[in-house]
Image 1 (spheres, rainbow, N blue to C red):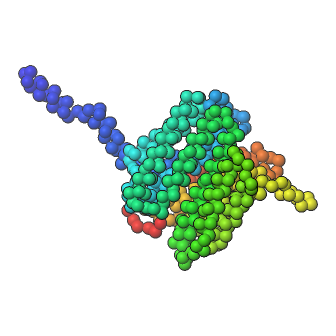
Image 2 (image 1 turned 90 degrees about the vertical axis):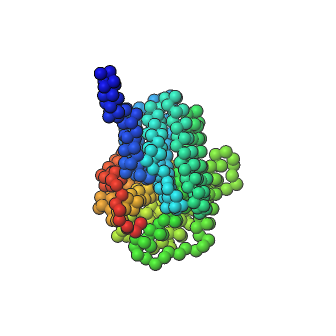
Image 3 (image 1 turned 90 degrees about the horizontal axis):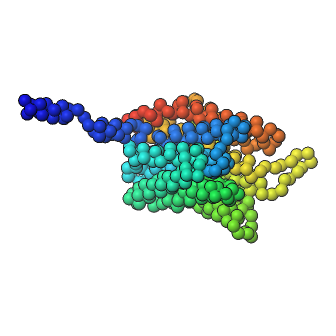
Length: 428
């Protein structure tokens, strides 16, 4: 009887899965979920949600309905960080780690590896929002791990694939990581003016990144999407633009520490003009009926205009009879962060989310409203305060327009990014 009882117990124990086995099955199931199939899916959705929450909290703060803890980073630093790095850098890294698979022919991260990065990212958001001295330190450490992990993954892919053309993204991502960590450390230690300078330098670094990526993909997308002849630009133009942009970033960054023999404004204006000259070759007018294309062209034009206005903001207000021409550095910077960065990011996400899930590049009509709302948000935040005295109203309208744009984007792309890839061949 004892032997039979032991045999039955053993059989029962064998049939009943252990908790470790159940946990393994749950992890395996989660690892195979489409949302973790390459970084772009989860990164895009989380970045948009982050921007909406961040702007909602920021609007509540400057309207007097929300207060931040006073012993962490400043409210302005939190707002800047979440929009530039919580939103912008997240999308940029998600795109680059996804595109690297195409560039190199090497498999990028997916499954539990993506989940680990997402976990780090979420912990950083929570730690920054709690905003106590201990959680800020935790956020800085975890954000460093997130950046280092992303750079290591990308470096491994391009080196293994001998993809020399994209080696330049290694120093670019590394510079963004250093600026990100410096911003948090400086503000946490009370260097608020220097923090703002680092934040502005970070935006200029994004301008450099957009100039490089945009210069590659916008002409290619335009030719394939609008069925045009190949676009050719003078061989000297893009290298000159890249060098001018790099010098502009370095000059602006250095201006806080040393006295320069020239103003960074010159390089900003020159970069903006070179962007305009290059775009003249891109046949922008031919894209007017294709939302996934005209949005990219308008974003690139906004980048050029924003850089020119940044340079102009260095000079004194010019008055012509009863008309005064004046724009602050901050307002010009918001033209770049919303109309250039924001619009280009939403346009790229809209296209990549279709192409990399096997769907035709025919977006929902709602996507055009996303682009219009982002442009309206840029106008109300960057231009309206310069021509009216209703700055608070302008900021509220701008935040609301962005929030609605984010809702529209999630309505269209959440089901797509949560679903399996469609096994069909479409032009990307």
